[in-house]
Image (cartoon, rainbow, N blue to C red; front, side, top):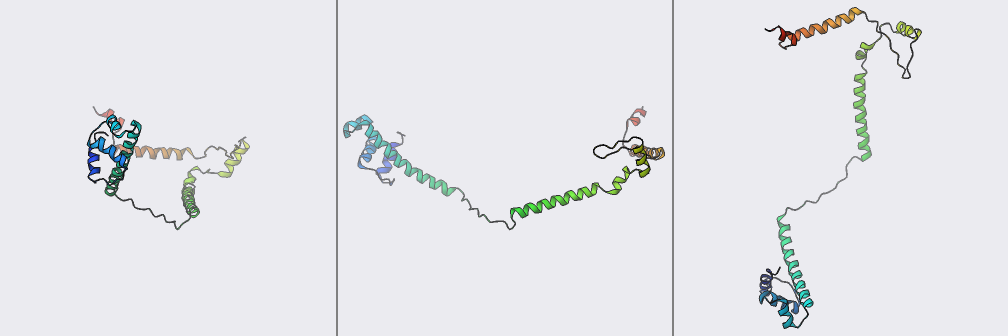
Length: 191
């Protein structure tokens, strides 16, 4: 900071820096800042120890720094946008009520999904044709009920029904080929 000392000393003695310092501190500032004397020279003139002169010099510099830092921080504060104070208002709904409402919504959604999954029309495809007869036959032929309560029965659908379903899926596949979708068979036929 020694290069700044002459400027700070001029500003202080022109009364541009309103900082209060003692007479000995002002004399150290005068000798080091305006007269540009070394510490050993000041020591001989003021008849003080080197440590006392350095201590006085440090005290003056701290006071000047504090004043200049305060000015700079005020300028920075004025240029920064002001923070708005956040006003905390309580909600009209308590946390327990909010949690209960959310739980009810989730239960309703789950119930709606379960109702859709357990639709009797969808489950009809897994129905046993002659329920009682097939069930009794399965139990008599040594069918074992698992711990989950499930028993497996062979389907009594006629082979004709299965064959009709396969034809329908085969026809829908041919329709796709006619609509413009290419298949491996069409690619082989092209020369």
